[in-house]
Length: 212
Length: 104
Image 1 (cartoon, helix red, strand yellow):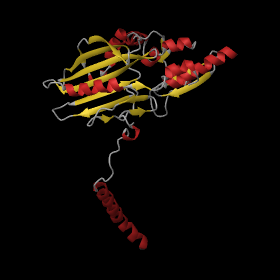
Image 2: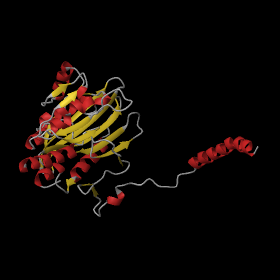
Image 3: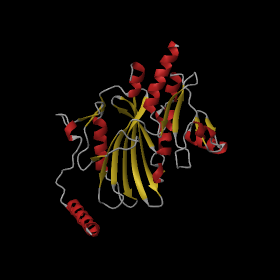
Image 4: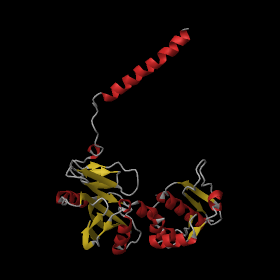
């Protein structure tokens, strides 16, 4: 009899527990979103990342992207509300697409793979020799069109060398085909790239100079 | 595969050679390797026995999974890792094997 009563009450208890859990899930969130870069910030405003990179992060509303792949080493994203899509990304990549150590060959290989999953058709990039961290580099600027969804993406890629490897800064800005690009985000990207420096030799440099 | 192509000059310095193995047919692989610009050999193993030897068949899953295998010059398997290649771990081990070669 007692057992029967317990069994008959159990669904009710579970329902009450379930409702309590639902209600607790609806309670206002009191914890703040933690910006991981704040704790790493130096007195001059720069951030030391993984003891290896120093840079000045772009200002809010740029947000650090939690990376679960190795396309980028450090990346920030900024979302806007002026239509769809409306977002910009800036990044430093230790292993940009492609494999050549010659800049011009590398950019051609790069654009064969970059944003491949987004089915973007890129215009021939405008190439310009630049200096990055005092060394020779290559700037490649192009616009890609996604012809089905009518989206466009402006890309600015800065290829340069870290040791003998080619590394890169990426900038992309997505907009609807009918909207114009926002140049302010690109200025943030340029500042980020200018502020960037390496505090340690790379893994590849260490590989042949000492035990990594 | 592109990562291995990117590291090919380092593999050569470390006296290592890389080869890819796939279940695709030769013609498919020729086109694919050419499109990706691969300059190392890619073998077609359409029957799949190499995948079985290296235990790339996951239980309950009918397809071969990706696996990186490093075999030293004496034919001993020194490394097997499923999933996306950890290029830094690969290079670190190749450097160690290269140093071992010099002392044997």
